[in-house]
Amino acid sequence: MTKSSLGFDLTPPTAEQKQQLAARLDPEARRILLNAGTEPAFCGKFDEYEEEGAYVCNLCDLPLFDSHAKFHSGSGWPSFYQGIDKDHIRNIVDRSHGMTRIEIRCARCDSHLGHVFEDGPRPTGLRYCLNSVAMEFIPEGQPLPDRLGRGAPEGDVLKL
Image (cartoon, rainbow, N blue to C red):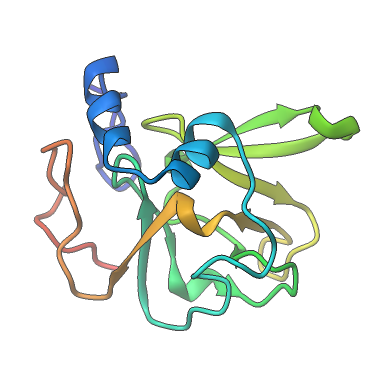
């Protein structure tokens, strides 16, 4: 079993588990998460979202981003300057659509999340640009979802 710096199990779901997790997604979420799609700008539910808490992968529930790292980029997509744990996000070179970008994927289930750009604010200079449907929001102090039955490393609530 591979664990992240925060202690989360990063073992990929089996093909059967991934199929079961994907079955609960709507067609748009499946298109984006499983087929590297992009939702239209300014349409996602988390672009202007202001609540405090954690954003987890909409497929496997791995915590990805903390609301304290969220900022308004004006891009039309939710933007963050850093992830919750560097081990929870995987970068891939994306040469689609006639350009070279860095795609970001969930390190556990390999779902497409969005892209990362080097035009973000301090302290990192990065802008993680996410599809809203790629994430689920968990209010601060609430239990994390655990559809894979792996549990959080220190109980059910992520300490941000």
